[in-house]
Length: 258
Image (tube, rainbow, N blue to C red; front, side, top):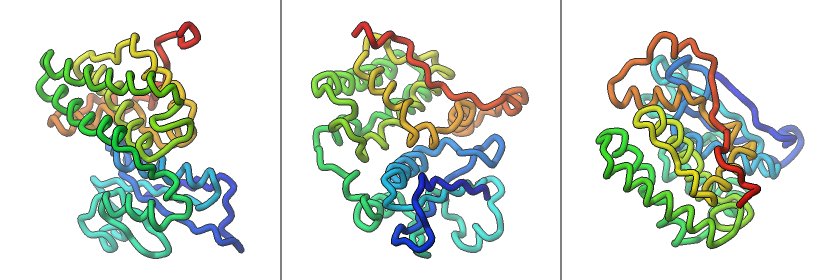
């Protein structure tokens, strides 16, 4: 297991700031760096934001699920990350992790805003990516494009930096990893690009790439690609396994002209 502390100045000694540990899936390529699990990145971002506010101290541990260490198997058996550990209490299921962050982690309730419009807006976006990658036909591309346009129009209408305002919330932590998977996997497998004319969405992604919470939690392009190769029973080529990890964070449009 590989450990990484994201304290951001939060003290663990002689203070009331609790340490939260998040166990996430490791890369399926090298077994050490961050893997491409969407829920792992989502909760990593939630907790990183709280660590930045110094309401918690965050410890992130990666686990290679192809060869999990004996102590992990002993403690968690066949459970897959993400796993949240708070004061010795292990929370194992995604909905329970979300509920625990909202109700029990200091400051967590501030992330979980109530906005039915936004909740509906980002719902099922990821399923459209998966359909596009599996079916590889124009209609599936169009379904994803329509959904992305709705998100773009929402952002343009609200005129805010993020989905519900100018501060991050749980919906952003859910959407941002999915946008990165759409961008990286969509391009690799079906030559799909997020259209340049969706400028409000690209502005949102520009802000996304400026966030430490995103960049510190984001998997490498190679890990995102291998995530879907494994789902499709495809193997990584040897040279791909040896590649230096890359991270797509460029913005292909000039936002100053908008």
